Image (cartoon, rainbow, N blue to C red; front, side):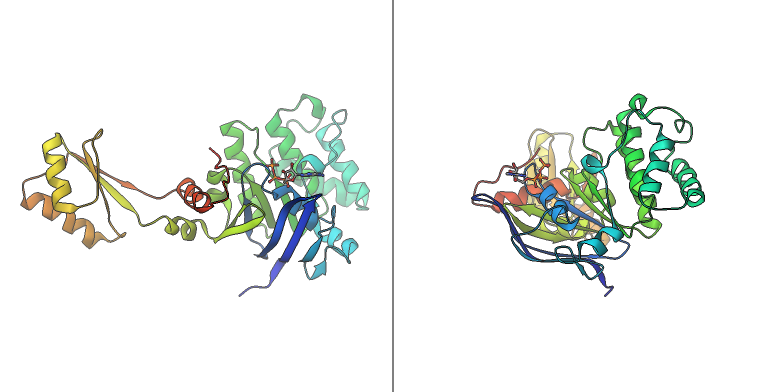
Length: 314
Ligand SMILES: Nc1ncnc2c1ncn2[C@@H]1O[C@H](COP(=O)(O)OP(=O)(O)OP(=O)(O)O)[C@@H](O)[C@H]1O
């Protein structure tokens, strides 16, 4: 197994009497995209603040590149970059000026900063807007500039705290594309999100946080397997055929759709067997459609197991 670049062991944090992180453990492999998924107030930002040395945990150990975020914060800061509410984007400056300013604040020499700023403006599709004041930028452009700024000093790890919250669908897709390209360039990405689809699209590994604990962890596919196998829905032209098919195949019947939903176990033989059985008994479906479990199903399943009354996000 590859060395983890981020390692979190038994991290705890409370605000007054309210426990927000209650013994969090996970590891993030170098060059991967890790998503911390959780509903509003689950503690995602608190975790990011601890990892990025902005806040101290009450207990446990978190390291980045082997450096302790608590005791070796200067070394940690050299490796990481934060975006979102933390980055200081100046609306009165142009996009390019913001990048140049941040480069100098990071003690890069003038020539390097200029070159890097030009690369980033291109990478984040901001060339045309480079000489315009940031206050005229759309939400999506600001968000892209924000990430570009955070990359000026070539960090090893970048934290993206809810990078697409509030963006329209098109800007969200374009942001996903950029995050993927970023990961391909070798940067380790720690992402927090409340969007299941976002974690599904982007993350190599997902950890679901609920009530201060990691309640599940794995790839999107592994998490989806928790809620069961792929299913197929056979639809019929009338209710009588639908009932007959249910008697033959078992499974669940959807009376509104005149369909029967059964597990395929992802196997072609199984699928062929189901179709043959229907054919033998003269019950031909008018259509069929596969139903893949989604991360929404996973989230519902995990949080509904929670007897403490966690609220499930839409
Ligand atoms: N400085 C603070 N003092 C007291 N309570 C806080 C503080 N910061 C956060 N909290 C509370 O801790 C809980 C976790 O907050 P946090 O911001 O980490 O959650 P989150 O998962 O990032 O949520 P969101 O998706 O809404 O940003 C919330 O109930 C929040 O109200």
